[in-house]
Length: 119
Image (tube, rainbow, N blue to C red; front, side, top):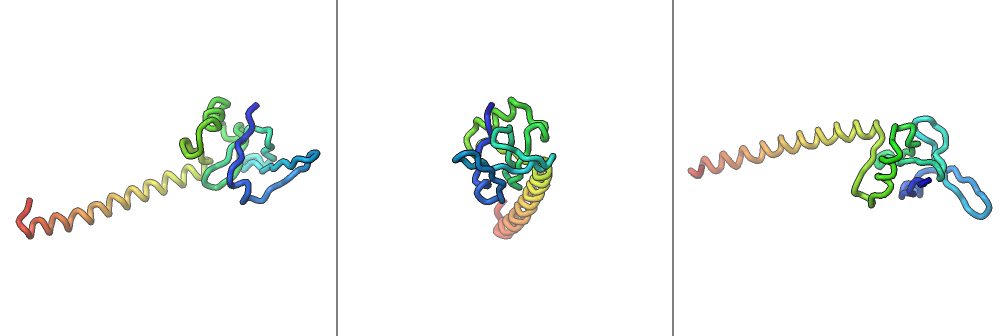
């Protein structure tokens, strides 16, 4: 069984710790079912909100989990449903602003070219 990969957020997020012998295990509550995502569980962290989820709670198959766990940091991203919806809305807004800005920059260039008699 593959365990979840630790992340930088584990240092920042309040942790529940359990001491077993001389080792300390860090656990987080699943954002869906609110039970603990243990180190031995298949769990995944949202890259935006840093919340942890059991793969079964977010309908992530074992194959999908293994694929995500095997990729290098930054090549494939996983966001929870809430953050995914927000990120799509944000991207639409950014692309819309970029398009509007492009139109506003292009229009003066055309006017200047027209004033100088250039096509």
